[in-house]
Every structure is written in structure tokens, then in C-alpha cells.
Image (cartoon, rainbow, N blue to C red; front, side):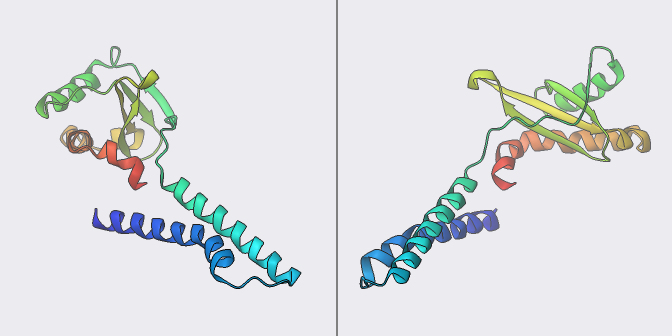
Length: 163
């Protein structure tokens, strides 16, 4: 966590230095009548403004909704999977995910996104098909518990800022 904070502070410092470049070039350096020198000042000032603005803009987390590259699982039809997910959710006193996806990677992840019009959060759980094929039920439950722990710890709120 400390490394994330330090990296944000470092990026803000660089952005402020870039944004201060036009002030330094035009406010503190003596003005010369040479055309080339004025052109370089303008170019470096434009660079500083664009670079500083870009860095600051990139630090702001976007609330873009990313599509999960997979197939949505209907838990009403997949009762055995639904029971396993419900058992882990109840054990951790966490709400069920509103959407569960089957993905092609040997991975699993959770995500939370804002609902339409900013009210509420939509929980998403994605499970990799290779995981479902190669793990025992106990190992699969451990993976589910791990993913639900991300909900519990609030990692889904902090994730967009870290990534």
C-alpha cells in the first residue's frame, strides 16, 4: 500500500513540475528577441502542459464498465454451482454475486461495478473453465473463499486505483 501511495505522490510531483515549466520559462528566464529561443520556449511550455495534464488525467480511476470475456452462467440452471457459491457467501456473510461468468483462462476473479445511475454495486464473479476441470471440490471451495475474501476486504473498491 505504501508503494502505491509513493508512486501516486511521485507521479503528482512530476506532473506539477511539467505544469510549472511554462511559468519557469516565461516568468523567470530573461526574454530574448531571438525567434528560435522564443519558439523553443513555446514548444517546451506546450510539452509541459500536455505532459502534466496527461499524467494527472491518468491518475484518475475510470468507472468504465469492462465486459467480461466469457459466458454468463445462469445459477438457476446450475444448481450445484449455485449451492457452492451460496455456501461460501453465507460463511463469509457476504452477498451473492449478481453475475457469474465462465471464462477461458485458468484464473478466477471478482469485480464490483456501479449499477446504472450510480445506485448500488453489481458484483461479478468469473471462474475459469480450466480451474473447474482440474481441481477437487475442496480446492474449488478454497478458490471461491479466496475470491469472496476480495469482496470482504474491499479489494474490489481499491483495485481500479491500483491497476
